[in-house]
Image (cartoon, rainbow, N blue to C red; front, side, top):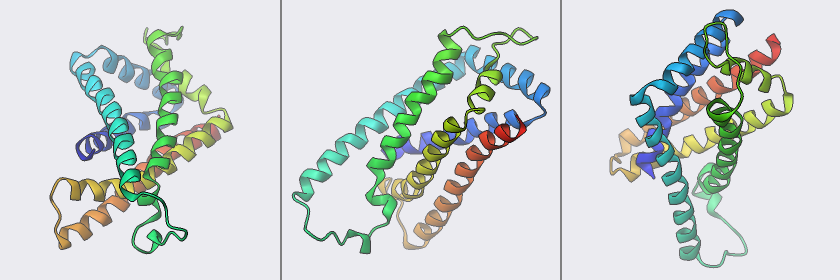
Length: 208
């Protein structure tokens, strides 16, 4: 769980840096983002990394289900008054719920962009690359899609706050001093990732 989560966190950084190209001036953004997407789809190294990514998403999901079932069996029946909030954070108690929101968003996201780019009838730009830019911009012209996107990344932010600190412990790197630094880093990382992804659809919607 920790290793797959850290890999997915690293991917979030790389994916965000690529998506920030969407905020360039429109004509430049279209050609540059489409060229970037074409490079990713045709590079053998990137393809291999993408297989690792898909495997990590699957393993992370399956491991979460397994640990959730195991935890439920270990806890047995719930007490009439649940006092766990005194010793744990809201996000740590709701990781499964947050994960479900993220997973459902991923299904929709893959269907709308990855599947369409790979197998759909996507037009080409003036440089002969598939026009993924227009596909993304059209999606972000829909306020309901932006709301879904926003809810999903807010859920991801809370998921990361607990996940970064939890991974640190799971890998056996716990130390009272470093744990505090990791916790602070987790908060800043989660906020940066969440805001970074949220500003993209909001700015595109305002511009269009």
